[in-house]
Amino acid sequence: MADIRNDPVVVIGLGRFGTSLALELTRRGTEVLAIDHRPKVVQSLAGQITHIATADATDLEALRQLGVPDFYRAVLAIGSDLEASILTASLLVELEIDDIWAKAVTRQHGRILSRLGVKHVVFPEHDMGERVAHLVSGRLLDY
Ligand code: ATP
Image (cartoon, rainbow, N blue to C red; front, top):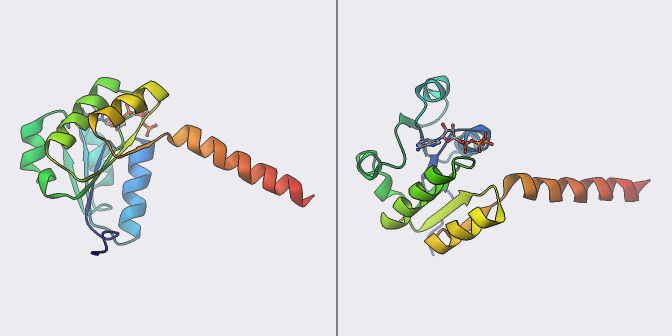
């Protein structure tokens, strides 16, 4: 079976979560195409990520022009703008991206993304809260 760990990844939405993810993937040697509709954000990250573009991810034609349909993996890192998240997720499914990861801010948001066909829904704040709780209780056991 082919190793997909180093396949290129498209990261959509460069808020704190998307930026940190895109930079970490780049640091690990993964080719990244990062997309955000805020030109200032894109300019500030230019040169740090393999490919970066200013575009509205809810625009199917823009995604096509950027070559998004050629990607096997995508991470949808738009969270608080629910409409943009749902619309973009439905386009990624329509473009038949095999491995779609998406950030959700609420359980309902996560359910909608799953129903649309997103394979992996993550809840960064909730998940990190759980991890920190494990770390904290682990530490406390040491005392
Ligand atoms: P974080 O917690 O990661 O900082 P957030 O949930 O507070 O993110 P969001 O509003 O979800 O912030 O947006 C994350 C990023 O997605 C922002 O940089 C925003 O510009 C970008 N974004 C939002 N809508 C679109 C869109 N339609 N096309 C492209 N990028 C978008």
